[in-house]
Image (cartoon, rainbow, N blue to C red):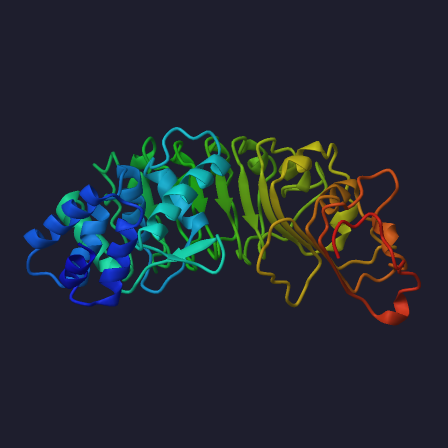
Length: 423
């Protein structure tokens, strides 16, 4: 039987690999059915590889896994399909059912992705954060969407404007990705999606000035504004009480986040603010947000944050017990020319004068749970034990401590540091 199936693959390695994985650990009856399907050539007129990809898709066991495969085809060719982006699409399409948290959604999605990898329809990445597709697979997936699901995928990357009435009548639109489009204004009809839109991507919208319309999208759970050069996060955003993920990464022009806007996002679980907002204020002292608002988000489990000025280290933001719930964090304090590591789970980077700005309790809570701690040119730091006061939790989880200090400044570095759990 195996020889017959290989014959049907015309000796093409990709076709053999995909079908081989589909047939792995299956019984004789399953092999017989596959062989019959191949002989029928139900997708006549198409190349052998495309034929086998479609057959492998047909034998996926759940409709959710099939939809997950089709969602992966929405990414550009040769593009890494990140789990973060895929979770956003999946939440929009309600692919994961009634999950209560993004962590639960991510775990369920990982199971589907593993099934697709084992079926040969996806390629495993170097780590668990992304997957990829064979070059020929995305076009095949789009063809499947058109034929089997009666769905259309239209590229709008070249649009320079969207008519104001464009979204009228789209009462079931759940996922919208307008990333990297050159339009200047959001159409007024975006408000028509108030009760249906769950996922919105506006990444790299470098000309966009006003996003206040987004505040009308009460069902929104995922909002990504990565690289969008907006000068202000509008007050209207505070109405997004169902929002679970907010990405404000690399918004270098973001100068204003009004007080209480972040605090109003009571469902927020994941927040990305690397290379972004620089105007943090002490609570109650100005017209911008404070770190105390971030600390008060009781559902927050993942935080990716850069703080330009080290003076915020000494800011008392009140109770720190919410920080202890963080599963993942990447916190960079002070400007660092380059701080990139492969796995950004639980990382803290400090570049500060410890004599001028003592490390606050909330920072110590994170350092006590970090896997990767980087100290870069911390003037005034004479002993690394200064970073671990006796009354705070030891850094038992720390696996790597990296010191980038001028040697003449360090007067004491104990050969054994029992508060470190790693190296």
